[in-house]
Image 1 (spheres, rainbow, N blue to C red):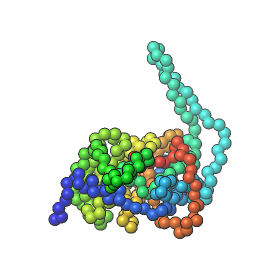
Image 2 (cartoon, rainbow, N blue to C red; image 1 turned 30 degrees about the vertical axis):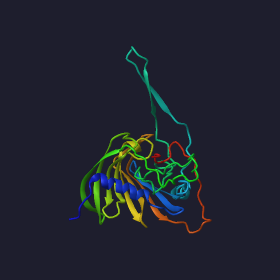
Image 3 (tube, helix red, strand yellow; image 1 turned 60 degrees about the horizontal axis):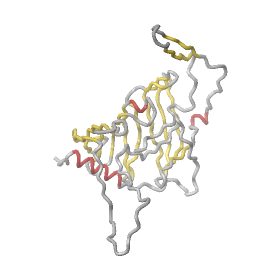
Image 4 (cartoon, rainbow, N blue to C red; image 1 turned 120 degrees about the vertical axis):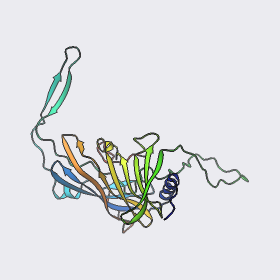
Length: 281
């Protein structure tokens, strides 16, 4: 039986392995957003690109499905009713109740400004070099700077199991601070390379209710580098306009390097309030 390191050692080796990865100059891919909008299946696919140099995500903001069948133009007026409740002592509470059918939405869950290389805080942030003092002549050369950071999680080793044919360490992570930012709750990493294979996170992206429900994230290792394969909501999403979304999945497909250095087909869209984005951690 293979000896398993302690949980803290596995965690540190995983963060070091993820931080040491070098991605290509640019990655092109397709983002597929699928699920049940009420009882109606929906699927939207967007062409996207990510550059490790500046971290920019470029996207064609109209999905393939929207291009093939543009949504109909709505007519008429929006109608709502105000309901006031009063106990006689305080000012009445007013609630607005929309009437009729909910308005159609252009994007299923929002414009997905996402990259398959997002690692949920596993990587070490690169130290800022701006403003560094110039070296003096004959001064000792600085090889590296090491800084200490308080622990974000209490890490425990649950077991060692085979996941999709790969032996993995299964970790439990309990946040010690900022639980809304430190979202990892379970993590499976390869016993040989310490790369992530699966994670369970307490909330995803930056918008409610997506940020308030658990998600399962599956990874694939390609050329020694980890990529997200899919992110699956583990609960029903109750959205605005009385929309109920089940089985929501964001998948990254057709990940590849661009065929030509002149192939820049996408734009860098503005970050909208209802866009799907990951928090900066």
